Length: 124
Ligand SMILES: Cc1ncc(COP(=O)(O)O)c(C=O)c1O
Image (cartoon, rainbow, N blue to C red; front, top):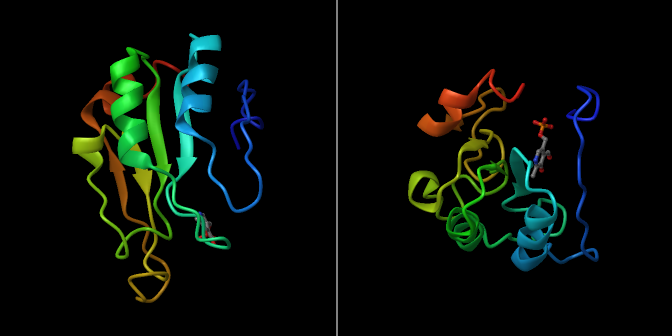
């Protein structure tokens, strides 16, 4: 979706069944100091891989980067702890039909106050 909007996407990959190590994400941030957002999937549905999101949030904030943190919480919501503000997650979205086992059609979304301040500024 971001590429369709003309954004420069730096894609990091890991072997099937593993998450991209946070150190690799921090290295990529250091190499791309103008990055505006880091996007991860918290819990990946087909493999069950869990990204260490709390550690990533803490590490990205500690790194001093200005990049926002975006987390797909589709499979995680209702099944795992999610502490968006405490972990420093700026954007998160989920759904109703997976762990919560409710009818599909609802998509809870969370946007931090620092992300709201930047809407429009970075073209996001
Ligand atoms: C982790 C994850 N993110 C996003 C999606 C996309 O959800 P949707 O099909 O509701 O757009 C899925 C769908 O299975 C998913 O498992």
